[in-house]
Image (cartoon, rainbow, N blue to C red; front, side):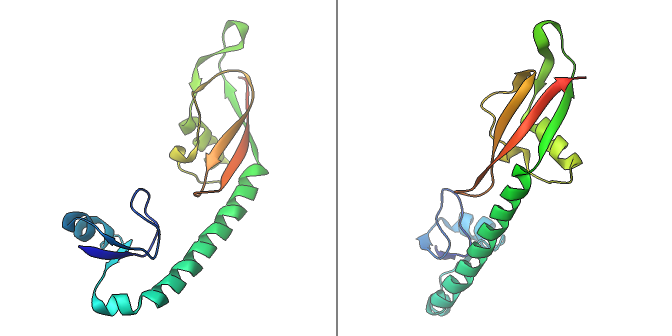
Length: 147
């Protein structure tokens, strides 16, 4: 099945590309979610118009991501933790904990955007990367303090 991607889809292609995909993937996933349209003669003739629309959407998304990055980088969060001897935490602080702390500051992000190499287990100050868009990454300062 030939399709025209309306939005960039990871591991599939970029917006505006004409691709050959399996029928089920196109009909059951891409087209119903409005990520793609069927590559009919009419749609191929309108491809240039679609590309302009796609460029406008992409520019708006990047502008929003840059603004969101600036908002995240101006915030630092403090997470109170129970600790034992030598300032080691009982348990650990994960991406889900950081996302909840941001939610308390009215910043809504998905925990999958937070790129922790491993959970935080010792008190201190950490710089945590947050992946927003393909080339845009914010850094968040996280303070782990005694409860």
